[in-house]
Length: 389
Image (cartoon, rainbow, N blue to C red; front, side, top):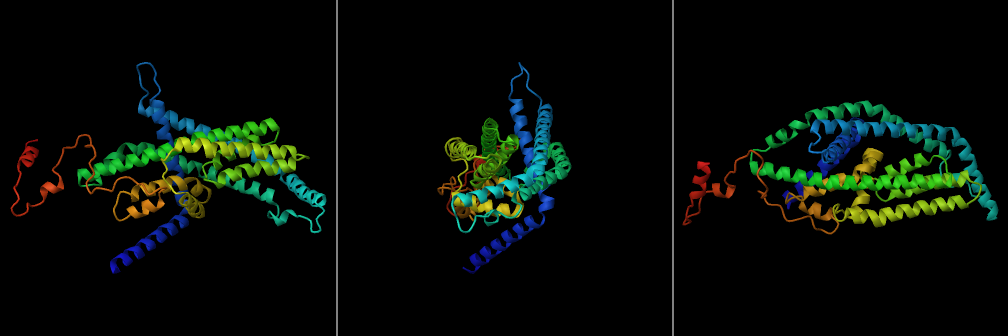
């Protein structure tokens, strides 16, 4: 009991220390984490490019990586220019929208014949629209300021990624443990890539449908709200609500009647419901294997540590934690508690049976190296066969 209590205490202390370091080192870690995400997306896009048939030829790996790098940074530059232009226009119009929003609340109080008028400050802080635009401008400025550092990190990751497998293999003295580590890494890559691929496709669909709906109704900044919907779709649960709230509030103050406001609210709500509750769960299946309450708690935790970036990354990080914890007997209960239904795969084996690594020779299992028990017959043929190889 004493040792188990000591282990729990040390684990809690270690987790607390790691969380504190992540929060304190936020300004240093976020550019590198962003670079890791971009590097991961570049490799995923490069794999897709290599699969495109070009007659009897296949796109070389270096060329595929270069094309993926150019495509992703070109798209990022285009999106940045679009968002910056829309935010600049919205910043100029913010005082007007703030005044009209206050007038809407005053009109609503008059129509309801309320003794105590409804004031905007009762629901939202003063200068809400201006503060929202300022927060968006600060976010864009911060991302632009760290873009050069992120680009440098990505370039170095691409240059050195050819040595990653060799270094990863050299970490383990036992080939079987190295094979198990490679199998674990492939499982993490498979599930994270599955999540990112589906989530990106779903987010693009949400952003496009949002832009088309707002453009059809005539609301300004449709492209900006479409990008916001795309980005917020990566944030579980609350992201969809916020994506509906922002354009609905603007419609409330932009139009003199409630018809467009109701149409935008219902239309965006229908888009978010159909994609988030009907289409996405069918595409995801059980690949996440995360409890709903765990997703909400991880959203709050990583949001407190890394802000919006932490909210976007909370699901992939938690998926990786579940996969890794399920591989060790001591941490397997944690994986079971974090999972959706308690199924985290078969119990871990100290020496998992996985395929041999390329160029490696098979070795005798650890059981064959143990001294024989008294009275037991010693079988030497497998060992002699190993020596003869």
